Image 1: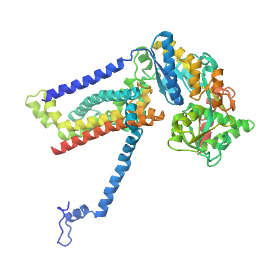
Image 2: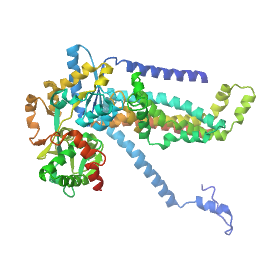
Image 3: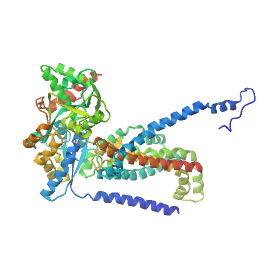
Image 4: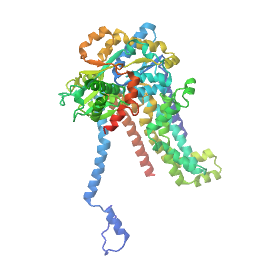
Length: 339
Length: 291
């Protein structure tokens, strides 16, 4: 009896393994992997089918696009450690630069290979408050008032949080005759009001929306409008400050990986097609600011006009990273000092 | 309990049984309070969360629940979780038996060190367990370039997930077997050998029947952890949807995608797997108790 039981048990396992093998073999077509940051989940979910259709019409080949999402810095680290991304679509140029600096996965001049500093879409940093805006938050200066509780991700791990931080920094410089000491004090007060520092933008949204923490969430414009769409405009309000930063989330082909996987042609087309009218329309629909002039005009009403400073005006990412976010940089000074 | 207690007619002596009796005879209010605290605690911290998971999973009806589960990404996550368990549990079972055998049947140098090392995965944070593999097999790691040149993918692919799970579930079977086999001694096995049984025959006819309950118990615990591991797997997964997300990772992904039903439906499957494991465990204990 026992031996019969044993055999049938073995057979069951064998059958299960065979089933698993069979189902993984069914996907025998070319596949590319897009490693992206947190808030782009919905955008690429909509863009990928459009691209697959486009590629099929162009080449008669059916491709598959796989997605991976997490904090921008974490994703850059994973690609350096060997996550086989054919393309990366990250939150800021600094994280993409690391692919060149740490691992030579991309050429040094990667940012010149596609239009608009390789940013097919831009965004900016805005606030989202609970309906009624009981703390009367209108601009950056309202965030440093006593008793205002802020939710933002951690600039050490999150790309979005670094844009948040630099927007606040630029605002403080502008309103204090470019005095860095005053700007430091401003940022210090701002982070003293931070109730929670999540590792990524989506984590912060969850803290603010689902866990009900904080009076105001500092976040990407696209993420803010997505919250309105997902959770109802009757519960939240988007507050656009008088001044913010032009966030340019860049994209690039990870040449070394794409070449090795034989996917360079798809990867290149995947990114350049992001600049097409069809893709730009999806971009506008998902609350990113389109780079195409016609499509941008179509969505102009969706995006309030405000004064935007660029990262180049702040000295570029390398300088900003070294000055603010590196160990013992300004952020470390003000955040440990703020405790 | 009442049957044991007999009113003592003798004057107080130093008879130890009287102190035992009074210790067993708790006042009624204390009993009720203790039971209420225990039950309340279990309800609050075990049953309530489980109910909330189910409530959210079915919040939009049974149809939405099935739709969430039948999504390709969810199915892929279930498959990957089962595959991981299917590889790690037998491997760790074999390892556990071998390790327990070596430790309880042989005398050798460094034995206590080995015993301590087996416990290492318990004492190390799962995140560290994951990072170890990235440091070893990642592109910047010791074997990274060699692996890439030979086209072998380990981290950010299924082998990495299996390795990380293997590491964190390492001690379960061995930990169950070692105390039992130590207590058992090897007289029965020696008797079998001296009566002419081969080593394999001795193992299957004498050792295995003696350790089978502890072994099954260890396998169940190992399985529960293999299916539920989050931290270590999260580090080595790369989070590729439909490919390297296990069920616990898929729960997080769905939750962050604002797909509450999907997240809680996946969580309910995980909880279901855990409940099945627990029921099996209870059955085993009950059977063992009846013997």
